[in-house]
Image (cartoon, rainbow, N blue to C red; front, side, top):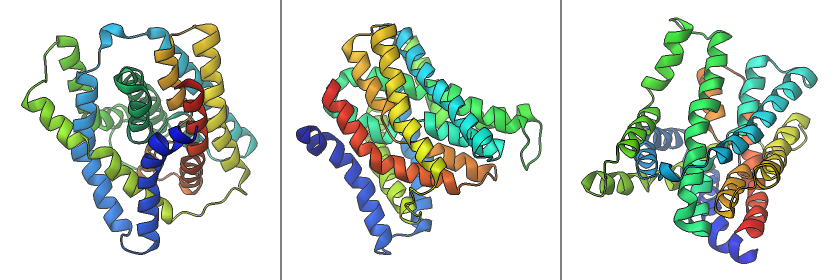
Length: 308
């Protein structure tokens, strides 16, 4: 377990800690974090997503894997909404985003590099499959629900929903990657080199910026809802995932390992970003991201030790 932590988990987590430390030392601030995140969103991440999807071997795709992972996500997503809205009396829009935070993992930046170290190239298809499904269904469904509940803006619900996708460079990159992959077109050329070269900067830059942003957030475990969402994300998602992967669908190990690693990962930052865009209170969202990021070091290491 110590070798897994030291050789795979710690190097990735250290980038978050470095960003946190540089923010604490006042060497970088919110404006720098915003600039880095904007560069990642518009430049680095589209290249990474395009290359991942374009080179994915979808002919080896396992539908039951996606069904199992999506099942675990949806159970926790709906349970979190019920808990937040029904028990803790938060507004429905905030509850939706807390549900997304409990389901949507930071797979692209945090888990993918760790999975590649532990499982090699076998990790790419399982993790990429979750990335595609999460962006299309979890992100898309959340945005659609928020639009149906109304947004401070102009235009129809359908127009706003569609604009979320066709103006998003990462959605465009996913779509282009799928076209390339399904058409059989090779990117073992300058296109692939460019995408790999630029995309390799996405994870470290994003994690460093995440550390900067988290530095300004209070680390509070006293909030019962934060504890509940953290437990649902880091414990319940992998527990349900394991039952579905192993006991229900009996998937091969090379699907189960990477899938469990993603399930045990921290909340992705997109829930927070969407909350800011839609004017939803983001205090609890930021705390969930902070707490799950730090405690996921334990869950990811434990899952890796059991499956790697």
